[in-house]
Amino acid sequence: MKLDIMDLNELKLNNLGIDKKEFGKIYTFIDFGNVDYWFEHDEKDGNGNILPAGNKSVISLEKLAEFSNLFFEHRRFYYGVDPKNHKSLHFVIKARSCYNFAGSKPIQRIKHYLKDTELQGNTRSLCEDMQGKYIYIPKCNFDVEISVDAIRLFEKYDTFCLFSSDVDFTALVRFLKKKGKKFILFSAGYVSHWLTDEATLNINAQKIKKDITFIKQKPRL
Image (cartoon, rainbow, N blue to C red):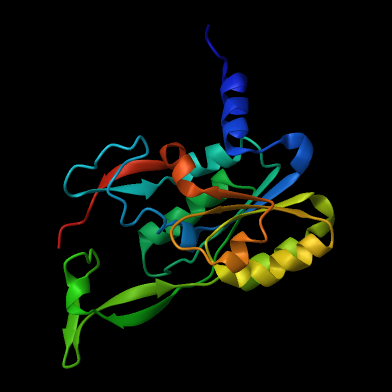
């Protein structure tokens, strides 16, 4: 017996524990600067197969949007932009066509000196000075912007859904829950119990990996 698309979507939601009757109107807030690193060091694809050497799982902008559209009434996307990088600018423009809202601001570049144990797994452009070898890590936090928007839009949703592993959102979540909101958390890697303990529903991103990623070759150094 074949399942139609609606049945498959309902099956996905049921497998994740998302009951539309329980959670009502869901607004999602995607902290993509955090989400983008969820599968950075994974050695398997979304089906549990070992990745070929030199490949990695990467979050797809379109697949993430398509997945979130299954059950979110409103989807908000936040990510930093490098004004000097055409690919970065194009990425944010593309995000604006995929989500109800896509917020951005210029990134900062933080110099990070690598330990010997970090050199082998590094995939970023390597620099060196008298203090040692280092890379530049893009940094652009959106916890303030997401918090302001979540409170500003408070009356429009029943459930606050967050794609992030950042514990800095704990205070926001506690405030929203005191006001009667439910909280769905999608996260990966190490996540502080301060955040996970507040979740009405906590979903490990590994469960949706095959729905939101594609395989890409790692850059050659």
